[in-house]
Structure formats: C-alpha cells, structure tokens
Image (cartoon, rainbow, N blue to C red):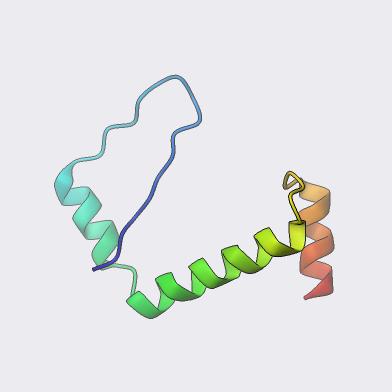
Length: 64
C-alpha cells in the first residue's frame, strides 16, 4: 500500500479525514510513488547537503 507522508510547515494544524487520505493514497500508483521516491533521492544526492532554493532547482532541471 502506498504511504503518503505530509508535513505542515505552519503553526496551524491541517486535519485531513481518513476517507480523504485513503482517496489520495489510492490515486497514486505504486510505480509512480517509487519513481517520485527515486527522483527525490537523486535530487538530494545532487544537492550534496545544500538547502534547496529556486536557483538550485533551476540548475538541477537545466542539467537534466
């Protein structure tokens, strides 16, 4: 089963119903989730510990 991980970066708490979470999770194919995870690891490796900025993301996309 897909596992959806969400983070909330503000002080307010976001509440999502169980039904909504299940709908979101079921809408993402396992292969898509695995690809997103792989791409995320590749971007993290490319960053080499740097904080992601718009400029760095633009550089990464350009290199792709």
